[in-house]
Image (tube, rainbow, N blue to C red; front, side, top):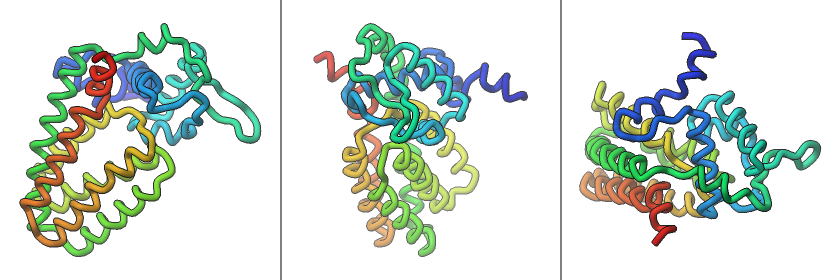
Length: 250
């Protein structure tokens, strides 16, 4: 498949999730929505500098060309502004147009479908965590601890999300479940395709769960480890975009 065709079709997790009842969006529109909702919800503040284009792509798990085109579209609509020269970059506009931000919102069907993705991930997360408490090696536990430390020092949401993905994938590998790990990674990728930027302070607070999980895994306490993972994923029902957006209207 050519690069052009891939770009036209969009990133696979977005398209695959359409089968679960999520509105079918191009990858570019999905990135626009995720950034727009973060601005509407106050997670990205007026004047805040976004990570560079490559970091936005990595942090949102999309291709660089998708990130570039999405940011260019948002700039054309006045949602973000681009500044050149020293200290330049892409910034949230001081007064993003409300009518554009209103268009960049998730539908009720999308919110319900993403909730189902959260539930699906929870089942996988509890399973891999249980077996990781039994099978994880000392070297794997040391690497998980290192990754949690990196997240604690992350400077922005993009850096954090990239390492967060590595952390959870390593927990799955540590379970020793073999081919079942591929199914877990697919579920993780489908859900990560709908994460939106969060303030780094919020993410560092979430990282406390990672630290608690490593401690439980080291102790071989499968019950405690599974409970940490359950809570860690369950909170997504309230903190992913569908929970935040519905809360805004209450």
